[in-house]
Length: 208
Length: 208
Image 1 (cartoon, rainbow over the protein chains, first blue to last red):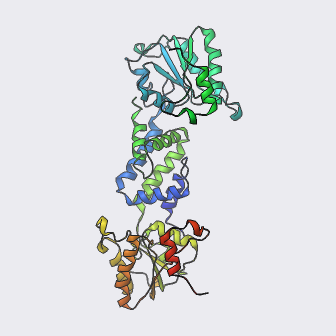
Image 2 (image 1 turned 180 degrees about the vertical axis):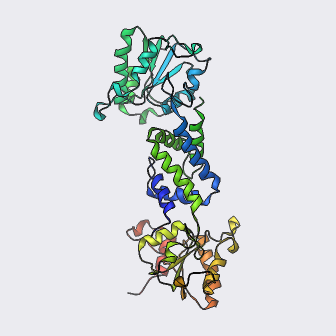
Image 3 (image 1 turned 60 degrees about the horizontal axis):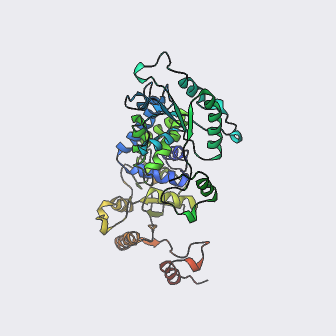
């Protein structure tokens, strides 16, 4: 059967999204067809907007609408700690804890020899420039004086490699470098915790 | 954290789709942000197109770009059998079998007393008008002479109710009415077939 072409088009475009196969795409497309026109219109607009308007923060490389992101521009944030994350979703996850009052730096990836991603492919140069002091074109009210860099990459092979690389790079600069803790997740059952996590939890035990 | 607003907008709009929660929406949004602009642009365009261009076929109520759908306009289709389906995706499923050479009629729903959907909410009037012969404004090359109506609604409570209603309506008009078979699905294991399906398979057994 040949469906009218705009439907097939929509199904094909939807199936390009991750985790959406042809069946789901088709279900979504027919759902959209059955809904008021507004839903499709709003979704189309927000898709166009997001690519037109979003760029990288000139300081921390977070996604932003303007030159600097809302976190870097927020005068209430601490200016002495940077939390280094892999991606904007990771930043969002940490921000949602409400535990961190400093600023971030988004690497946009992890060092991964297997995938051919080296330090130069990440936003590490931007991080070093930040640590060397204020740039000429920066607003003076967001000037920072960094004393600690918290490495918050995932405890995966690539995350650990990136963390190790950054530690070796930053420590000689006299900056305190720390790493987020790994261990048994809160609320989980010891019996079902994997061996790697459990041995890490033992190694990194704290005195009470 | 306040993400730049266009991203939140996109996430909100994506979460309105069925089966897409806030987490998936957020993953999709950041995926779209990381992809070349073309992906978002094409998806936005196809969303607009699908609502602007798609209407109902004047004869069978299938989704179509023009006045009549490609199946109704196809001169190679049989003009004596109508297969009645609940929705456009159901039509697509039957069409994909390649077993049916007649035309369709899409009801756009099923009779469902529980949800307050009665016969008048479906495209049954359009079906009756079709069975009464050619309309004045129809192209003569697609004129039809229906002798059999195949009821291909799902074997669910609502599907059976709709099928029963249509049988009572159409049989007195002297039209042959048939129903798709129910039974054990091909390739499945008798042991794990539910009781309702199995008893139906027994009741509707065929002599070999």
